[in-house]
Amino acid sequence: MALQFIDQSLSGIGRSDRRIIRSHVMRGKNTGKQRRSTKKQKNVAELKSLLYAPESGYVIPRQVLWSDLCVTSFPQELDSQSMGLMHRWFFDISDTLFPPQFCTKFDIIKSIWVNCILADEAYFHSTLAINASYVDFFQRKPAISPRTLHHISKAYALVNIKLSGPFSVSDSAIAAVVSLAIYQQVHHQPAIGLVHLHGLYHMIELRGGIARLMQENRALAMKPLRLDIELAMQNGTPTLFRGDEVPIHSVLCDHDVSNRHLPRDTFWMPPIMLDLLSFSKSLNEAARRSKPKLDPLDYTETLLSLLYRLVDVLPRRKPTTKPGGLYGHVTYLAMLSFMTTMLPEYTRDGPSFSLLSDGLESAMQDLCATAPESSDYNSSLILWILFISGISVLNLKDHYWLSPLIADNCTRLGLENWGAIQRELSRFSWIFSLHEDQGRHLWEHVRLGSREVSWDIPSRESS
Image (cartoon, rainbow, N blue to C red; front, side):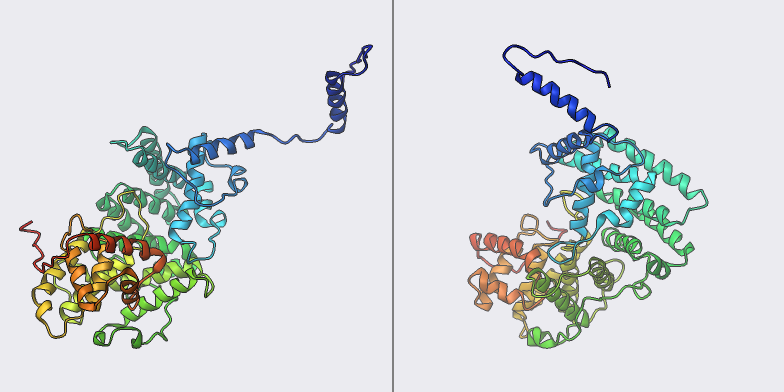
């Protein structure tokens, strides 16, 4: 270290002189030590500015431990915007799939999905393509941006290379194809997603089947199963993985729940209605902290198991043979609508389940043709069906007959305020943290709207 003499002025050592002295002393103390870089701190500030900027539309709902990811090495160097989006994806998708009000914290940093992003370039690019797509949506871009096209093109090219190599049915290959299917879901292209799903099905069969994959990698195996259900609901096609062979169970359903929880005139209800009631009870208790929160993968497995048992009621080529007559068919559709409120929304437009909404409207037409004059008319059940349908796959704008039917059934039951309606609805499957605000909002529309009752639901052909 070069010596530097400091000349003392007649007035003594000044402030600038002291600064030079301290600098020389600290150089000696810090010799050989690594200096902590301020570059990471600057990056963190940039990321926070990006994520919290009002014009970006992105808000992180809880504190993020930036250091967990800032020190990682991705397959490709990221600019600050892409890094910010990657951070948001890691933590927000975890809260979407495993709602924190029900589930214990899912350690996304140690999950297979973060490992795939860090170790597999194909999955890395497909994830960035999905993230960039969200930016396109929030910025109201009419076309896919060059950034999105770049990443999805790279992802497809790398997946093709992977599928032609020796690791074509590895965990990373299955994860990469899953991400391509999710990308198509984001862009509302379920037909292309179905092509990817068929590819996944054959890959999993070559691995020994879905049961073996569940044993080897439970978190990975449930991704194709979720896609299988969602695409069956969107395309009107049968599930590829047969429900009676899928190794998933309603592990969070307490079978001690008895028929006394349901109104007496619903004795014909199948066991799955009790399972849904039990599942709702578990979620409500976890949200109220009266019981411990649920394991995230147990929550997902129960969700998928119930969906596989219900998805077959969708109208395809023949009428349903489910028990209960007209009440049975419309109730099964309502139970499926209830389950959609726990499926992820890939875009701001929400999930598209037009087959389910069409089936519900048609079933309500058939029911309303005879039900009002029937001696066994079930106002409680119809009210639950109308509310669940109205907060899931139907809306007042396109199905204006919902409002007067809700008003009529509330009158029949003597329900004049939301508290009384809520108590009636909670006799069936009702998850307060998910359905309360939407249900109240629907009731406000009904209360402020016309109470003139019309049981003549217009057919889709005449509308």
